[in-house]
Structure formats: C-alpha cells, structure tokens
Length: 151
Image (cartoon, rainbow, N blue to C red; front, side, top):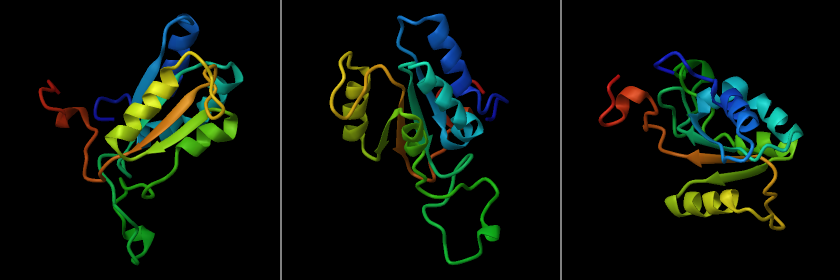
C-alpha cells in the first residue's frame, strides 16, 4: 500500500511456509492487497499449506463505502471496492477453510479453530484458512494511520 508493497502477502506467506514447514505462518492484509494475488491461494491449497490468511475488509483501498448507493457505480471513489465482498469464498473454491467474521468474538473463535492441530467436520487443519474480517469502511489500514507508526 502506502509503502509500495501492496499485494505481496499471499506469495510471501507461501514462500515462508515452504521455507519453514514446521512453523505456523499467518498473513494479515487489506482487502485490496489480497485482491492483487488472491488466486495464489490455489497454490497454498494444492500443496496443503496450513497458512492462515487474514483479510481486513474495509471495502476499499484506504477506505470504502458501507453500501452501494442508488447512484451509478461510476460515481464511486476509485479506491472503493464492492461492499462486504466475501473473499473467504475464493479460498473455499480451492478447498481452503473459509470464514467471514464481523465481531471480535468471531475472530477469536475462528483463530482458535485455525490454529488447532486436529481437524473437525467443518475445518481441515492441513489446509489453508482464509478469514475475511469485515471492519468499518472508514477504518484505514494504511501504515501511517497506525498509532506510533514511523511512516
């Protein structure tokens, strides 16, 4: 994003998991960054890499819209993405575990399931997991917006 590295999280996570197969790999990225390389989740599924991909979905590149208004989509900011897109379904299409969450309790529960070493009927521990975290559209994921950031 703001530091010129948007979209590399999925590929870097795959490389890290291959380099360190006994370690747990987690990547946290925004919805726009995930969109640049989301199809690479197929590689993680093909090789059964148990990576946890966490997507902070604010419906936009820096911020987005809560919903599409009745106006033309051409009137939306070019940094807005479709509201509440279910990115976890991309992972599910390839065989990954996929979860859509919108509350802190849901995040905690899905992370516990994702880090469990045993499979359940609804979660396969040997496969990647995509956790799509819906956050406020006005939440910025830019490094410069993080308190204490040096950028």
